[in-house]
Structures are given as structure tokens and as C-alpha cells.
Image (cartoon, rainbow, N blue to C red):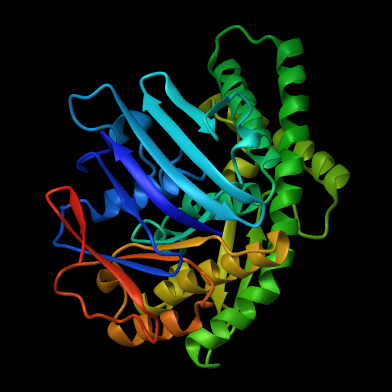
Length: 365
């Protein structure tokens, strides 16, 4: 899988242009605030219309413009596909091979990206939301239906919280919404646990390579009501029991007290929680290991690698870690890599197509 070109119109601080990419290594160099991260964001947006910077739709549109367009051509094992996303105040509109797509399931999976960036580093050091998003995105890139399960669950969660905050309690409606939310939430937890079981052995080997066999890395799903040994039916029962335990707290706060929206992923190195006890280097290495494992799991599941985006790793990794990372990345993976002008050129033995970005203009070197 690779992206042969990307075209952007009114996207953040980038000028309107089309960039042809190599199917191997692509390096974009420039000073800060010139548009490097915006280009990486636009490219990765082609997977599902979402930003890895957690941005709202309107934040991705150039100041004082009403809409933006991201277009790209991807080549995967099923053929060549033209993707187009329109961003505006109404949200997102999708086209595949010049046909507007009404069902997003038909669009997701045409091209996929694994992203190593400053935002990704929050997985090991930030709040639980970043770790939940890692799990959820990893699942729905391989199983698009999961994204809609997530969306339906979140709608029910918002409705339930509104009922909890309301003065007049509609107990019948509360029961209906709670039952539906528990059913969807249990499926989410089951999928997350299943994903962990698949990625865990791959992650163990990836981290051994990153750490030079000096560290053991593992993952554990943390929940108030679900353990990794439970199946969907038992998760539902446990979920209902947890909500009963939190009933008084929910009444006082107006917030649902248990569910996949509150769960966490514990990342451990040599048995210790990285978020609490890990060094800065261990936190970075743990995220890199997760992303490399994500690459390989996608390959094992879908038969091809996703595109790898590495945004300004000169700011995140020293030269030794960069070299080690580039040596581990399989040669058949398309890489989009950004560097500041002062960054060391570390592409290993790969031949790289090089670009410069200045004031939103992208030019091939």
C-alpha cells in the first residue's frame, strides 16, 4: 500500500498544490511552522477524514476560507483508487473514484497510516484517552464496522448523561438507553481485548529489537468491570453490576461512572508502569514499539503494510534511536518523514525522495 500523490486545497497553512510521492522513502525538510506537520496531517486524513492532531474539521481549513479539499491516489493490493475528502462547516464528504460515498465503511481501509508524532507520544505519558484512541484506531482500520459501534456507543453515552443531569428522571427511557449502551460497550471492550491479544506477542518482539534485548514490554487492559478472560455476555453482566455500584455517584455527578470510555491501557516495561516509572527514553521507545507492532499486525491481517508517517522525529528521538528505527522498518513500507532544516539526514541505506517546505510551498529537491 502506498500513496502516489496528494493534492491539497485550503488546508491549514499549505498553499494549494499537488505533490507526487515515491513509493519508498519521502523526506520533507523545512524550518518550524512552514507546513510540514500540516502536510502529514493532510495525508493521514485520507484514511478516514480525521486528524492525528485531534483537530476539529474547521481547524483544518485555511483561515477565512469556507472549505478545504484533500485528494490522493493510493495503490493497494486491490488496485488503484482515487480518494477525495471535502471539509467544511457541515463536516466531511467523501469520494472514492469520483463517486460520492454515503457509507463511510466503503471508504475506510482504502489507505491506512501508522503515525509516529509528538501527539503519538501522549500514548505513553498522557491521559487514558490517548491510549484508548490507540486501541480504537488500531481496531477500526482493520475492521471499519467497529468505528460505527464506537459512534453509536458515544451517542447513547451522551443521552444517558443528559438523563442523569435532568431534574425529571424518566426511568423507562433510562433503562432502554442503559441496556443499549451496555450491549455496545461490551462489544467495544471485547474487541479491544481481542486486539491486545493479537498485538501483544508482536509488540514483545518489536520492543526487544528497539531496546537491544534489554527490556520486556507488555500491555494490560484496565477496567472497573471487565477482565481479559471475560466473553461478551459476561462483560455485559459485569458492566450492569458496575453501573449499579456507581448509581449514587452518577446521581450526584450526572456522569456515567463505568464503561469503555473510562478504561485504560497499562503499558509496562520490565513489569513497571511506563507512565509512572518510565524514563523519557523508555516512554518514547514504548510508543515506537507500539507503532511498529501496529504496522506488522496490519500486515498480518490485511496482507500489506500501511503507510508510515514520522513527523519531526528529530525533535523526539536522538540520532541513535532514529537510525535504529529506520533499520527496523521493513523496506516495503512507504515512509513520509519530516525533518527540520537542521536535522541529521538519517535514512539508512534507503534512497529518499527529498522535498523542502517553505511558507506552505512544497518543492522537490
